Length: 346
Ligand code: KG4
Ligand code: ZN
Image (cartoon, rainbow, N blue to C red; front, side, top):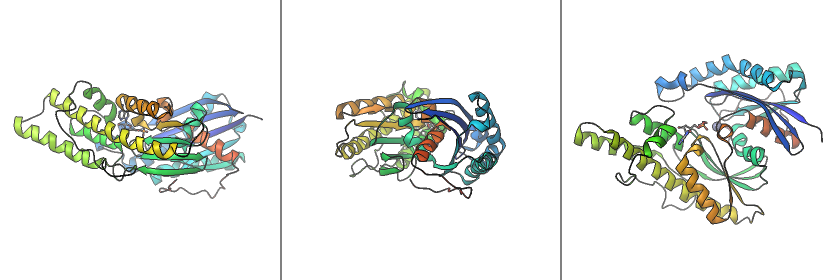
């Protein structure tokens, strides 16, 4: 086989990213991967502001691509294909990436491949660990939470997911409520190590219902009430109160993800995969106690637990380039009429 070099572009949420990936048979090498985050641009607003995000992507996407090419050591004419996130996500951001990719495809005459962002996350364990189909994936980030049965490069079965907020969003809101910095996940995890998770009993929404659906918004409301009760009683919250609230919140998330993962694993293992694997992706997969719980669960159930390196778990363009490679192998190429799809279910 001859080597293929793919340029990937990602701009669907609050990271502008470009990467160059070279694949030669079963050998994949990330030649460069550039990510320009926007955390500071949205810090004052308690969430990603679509208009601000769109402008930043439009300003930065060309620079990211140039940077990625330069770091890869390859000129544009040695790129074999251009893969770009075409959705789902914030329309303004997705458009910035898609327009950039179209321009490059038009200029070079190379194939353009529109990629579903979620497929990018879902296929990453194949890039990092060479997983074979089918495997089970839990995608947990600030915007997503779902179990996917990955049966082929373009074949995903959703076993369940959140019916409201994503866990990362809940971590971020918890941090905000307790006066901790953003992104909330790492801050809450740090505080939780000093807290007693049993002091504030928080609910585990949907845990008693069958299936793999999850809910996190009730948890957030319960946390708010617990905090307000403390404030009412003492006129404020102490460092210890805060640590206990963080610990209670995190344990509730761990319990929900653990139980729903157990059920998803049962469904997956019923397919009798020859090398069972349970993979995680998304920023929340960085959480220590969540990782530990899922690692133990997978081991108990006889599945190999796979957690790609964090830089490839969170939003990046190497995963888009890789999904582009898989699409190309499958003969899936988009035309220059590729359109941005803000809503694009897998
Ligand atoms: O995948 P990601 O970088 O971006 C998208 O949401 O697309 O995930 C970011 C999310 C944020 O909500 C952040 O608070 C959360 O992942 N996160 C964590 C941890 N590190 C990041 N959540 C819990 N524990 C962590 N250690
Ligand atoms: Zn993502």
